[in-house]
Length: 284
Figure: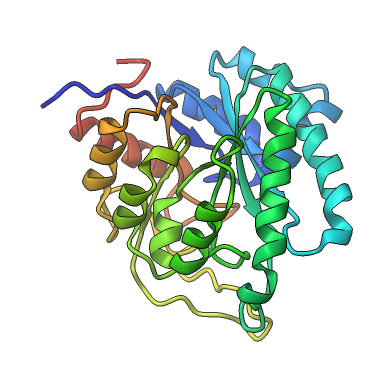
């Protein structure tokens, strides 16, 4: 098998936010080479005096997920204030990549055409401001937010300045949102500077009476790598062949307090799958 260029990291959301210390410790022990947390988790760690968590476990913080307001111009400054606080913490820890998503919206009534100009303006302005701080903003499409469908993804990526905004495809989220992640990643590979490598069970999404997704399998419809319908080998080939991607591949599996299998077993399955794809881990 051909030599793989990229290291493998893992986000911490397979565990509940309250258990980030366990997540970092387990992922480091399994040989993952970097981690990602939420921006608000960095706030909590700072308040608790625990920002040395990554250094203690000898694993770098690579990126953080920021949920930012995109649709309401009146809330831009408040959203920017919290994002700037998270960005300063990231920068102090040596992390470079902001994985940016939008706020939750009710997709039953959301009108993208009405909102798209404001969304493009907001994402572009966040990108410019955070670039001035030495950070790379990579937009992450997410179900239940303003950027979910293929049309929305393409419109945003073609509307922003690539000097300030890159792309962070979550390949399972894209498939869950109804698009072909291989085609999307292929078409925008020149913008891909961060990625969430994740699999999806392919089952139809169900919603509650408030329009929120129902978590049917304990992993929000996602699965360990190789156990769902996403063409993971095709995604890996696109990333490995990319001339601009120089980041870690960040694996993800949404979890929480209750998961169908233990969180450690889930991330071990991800590691085993990637071993079979030719990737090596820090403890091998």
